[in-house]
Image (tube, rainbow, N blue to C red):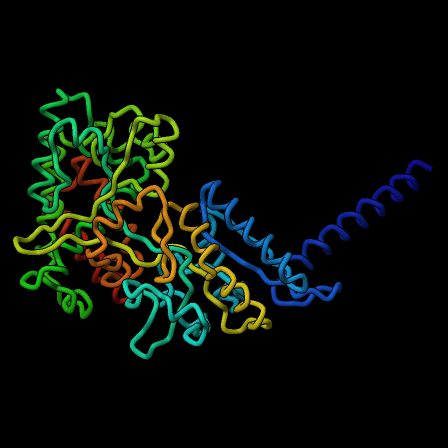
Length: 425
């Protein structure tokens, strides 16, 4: 009897598990199908990270579904697992109906996306994004939720206190760092780097490589970087300058262990003057201390006579899978997201500039974006000029430089070796 009862429990358990797996499987495969209730089900994968961003997109999806009751949007925000998930989907040619290209609309995802050039929103695209989201044939690869303008964040009150103007050149930046160290008597970190996550070190090298090697006419090596003939000794001045900052005590002593999460509290306590940390640093620090004001500025020029640059272009986007079974419904959602009031919602939630000319969204850094509105946005250096895999090399070599394991010359040599190896793969 006990044996029969055990078998009965096993059958019930197996039935429940099988039913549960069946439901999960149907949800997973429903991304390109029509539900039994007659609704079109679309999958939306995005890299939005913080809670404010997530709340904003979820609210807009809910609004869209209310206005379009025959369409159901499945929002997926996998965070750090996003890239791995999308690589698997690319390999299987089973992409989400709508997805974020997060800076790789052409180089990584280009063959998977449908052209959006005939959509209404394109006529309002900020020209600064043309070289990022359009190719020479006019194909438009993705709708930008916002646009990236990366540079350097700074504590406005500290600069005012010490009589420092936002520096325009690297020499001025070095002088500003030295002034902060001297006048604060070491109480304020001139340049704070959260190198405990070494990608933040790579971010600095990536941003500064553009003014060193691209934007100045007499020191522009874009063609050589693209054809593989670049002399990597010309990269050495960048690690030399970073090492100089460290040796002069202009960088936080805990650079190799500091975490990005510390930036908000340190900025709120007026312990940081400059940092390459961006995103929600400003509003988050001001929420902790309403007296604090965080500014943002373009990357300083390195060569005499050159101009500053914003680095970025594409940040969060919505691309349309070329093989979606419901292109019209997917396009309807993109056009909905492109409505001025919705663009403004996302610009505020992400503390980033809006991407369209028919929108003038205000966010935490708006006054600074307007101050530097004539500064050109240059694309991320690694996304244009380096082979896939070089971001990891910049991360590790930068960390080794700051730990003393590599000299600036050795760093450049290693960068060149890895650049050659990865180009050949």
